[in-house]
Image 1 (cartoon, rainbow, N blue to C red):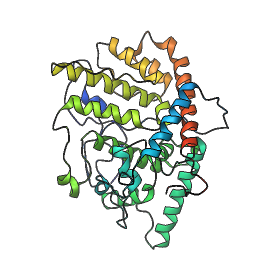
Image 2 (cartoon, rainbow, N blue to C red):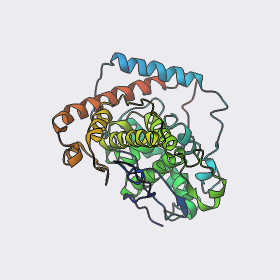
Image 3 (tube, rainbow, N blue to C red):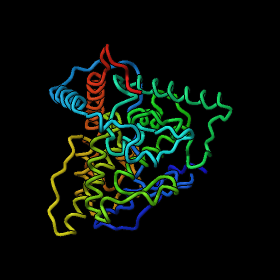
Length: 342
């Protein structure tokens, strides 16, 4: 078994100016799992020195909305396991609840509750080290080649998606290349399942039903919903913004091909908005690969004419992500009479 984080087409479905296969990749497909997954997630801003931010009206509104959403969650929605737990099997059979929950609710907060910036990475490092120690103490150390990736899910089973993003992006330089690749594979698996594309143990594939039944426009709309719901740190990157813009273009083209008018699903992310404008103007298929940095984005032929706007837009996007991350940490800080979620 090995992880292949490179982009490999998973579908030959072709769009007018873009292709669905450009928005999809197979990650970790050779680890005893059947895979049809969405493209791997974007890099986030890594940790650094402390930054003091005055929350804008928008950020304060975001915090208020998050607090209300948190208060409104029911015990039923927080039930252990959930419908996707079988696709994240662990060595001891314990449900990888945080991983499974992120399929339907990628913004769900558990391990990163009350944390922002470098603190998320520090917490993830400590949780993973504890898992390594527990596996070693059992007499069976972590096995990268474990059946169905069970040790992967055991290692990262209590990390919410914000924590996974910290690992995937190597925030603070605390994670190995192998750990980054595992996190990326799991995040792509979550996104793929949310899109109705199976990725998980072959033994469980028969239990999975594509809720969109081949409706590719509905599938891409679900992808937009998923991408919009991820944590603020994930949204600070060029990769996420490019994939979000691409998903919207795909959704709009596919919907019109059905004879319908697409909903207006514009992002409030400034970088995704700029990239979408460039894609709308392009008549070619720009996504042979996903640019990982603003400098790489500037070299893309389809982005020509928008370069002068990029640096300021990218900086504004990062500032917005930092503010929203702080707001989310404030909204999810455990009260004195409650324990932090596992």
